[in-house]
Image (cartoon, rainbow, N blue to C red):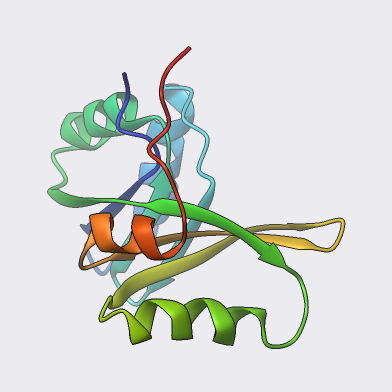
Length: 132
């Protein structure tokens, strides 16, 4: 059983072509980047191809840290994110990262990390997936 969707945090060198280098290596390993965020030289890449991403980053000699993510779908309307984050906050769960994966047919799919996975799953009525 895989780890599911993972957030890879990497720090790139401050020079032209670094993102191209990483994205080409991911492509060479057949890795689909579901979403990403880059600010200056800090890059976070989200994928569910964990083993392949580890191999790609190791092949480049780039250090990284990982965080497991949860997913949640919610209505694509004003206030949905507020209600979602309030439910977690009222339970004492801190959201440590959050990404919009898609917005389709009136729904928004999020990937997010928290400081207490078990409590977040309980508050959001989520159950760990069981492989077929």
